[in-house]
Image 1 (cartoon, chains in turn blue, red):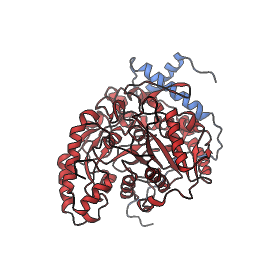
Image 2 (cartoon, each protein chain N blue to C red):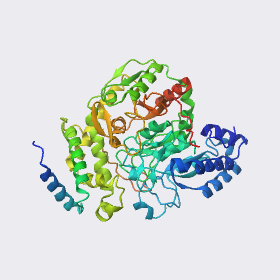
Image 3 (spheres, rainbow over the protein chains, first blue to last red):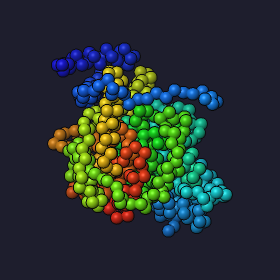
Length: 71
Length: 467
């Protein structure tokens, strides 16, 4: 997959930010682009390891028992 | 020993229990030391003199005083712990206007039940997102061994307060290295217990998937005393394991005989500067260790920790990022904004990789009991340092301080950090820490090895000459 251009990255940042209700000012944009770039580099590492369907996420939900329930 | 000279927690408690020292005098001595040293250290964001002296007076009158393991020991906590009557800042300006905490955090209550006396709250990186405690709102916490250098973070105030002899015991949190990094850079002992061992109830979260709490001290015995006093399940923290108490203090003198110990290779040597390698090699030599152990895919595990932290941390603050981004510390603001945009697939895959990595590392503990690795790539850099040279690469200094701790906390292993000295050619006055890492729930092995190294005189945590 080809790396997105700088313009495409900025457009993606603006679109996702708008979806989340975030306003990124012109002053903040260079920093935000730098850090989204860093996250993308980390993601390349993470997405680059082949996992199997048996590799479950390391998050476990614990059902919450009502207080006073003796069962 | 007078109350005016900084003593260890164990020494102070023994004197208070025996009636040679009043808790009130022990606490007043700590308050005096804090007042004298704060202008050079800036570890505290709140000093609770009135509360502390009242509590100390109660200890002096307490019928159980002679049985309290931490009788009269002054301690302080990173300002993400709830303290009744104070807003829980978590290093931020935003939380300064939040309602004051109604009660103390569970770990504060447990330490006070053991006789310790809370004297204040400590500086940190905003929302625990940093490794340097260069906090713009409250000022940087300076390294007591060289005030031109960082204290490390995010629990920088916790490490600096101990190194400066302000208090013998503090608490911090560790999501990616925030106990081990400042312990390494300030030359204190630190313990990051197994994920789920100590309850986080009443502390401000950073990344619920990765947050741990733990103590800093100037001796291994003090770490163990505090850790033992804080153990126990708490249903209010869903990540806290339902385990019984497993006290380590009685086991400290057992040494390392019979333990299978290895040095972590690969990433953990590649990303370390010469002083960090020298520290690990000195510990290995003292323990008679020649075996090298390599974990698979450490760089990917570190990347997973980075992304989980980024996504969970930013989501926690999404509401404030929408409405008052300008009130965040410039050191964190654009990182939080960027991290809020992370795709779900990256987060879920990171959590899957984390589990994959934990299973492979568990395999390595079938043939070894303890592993040794550097805690930081180098000694504390100067405040304001932007770049670091590691493994021939120019890396951002602030994020890189956690390169060697992130892969370990990512899978929740217990770690004791021990300080060594005189190993940096350019900064021989500065300490550097070594991680002693065990399988889950084996804090006893980490602390036994730490106590053995302390006994040998290889690792120690002197009070800095700040006055």
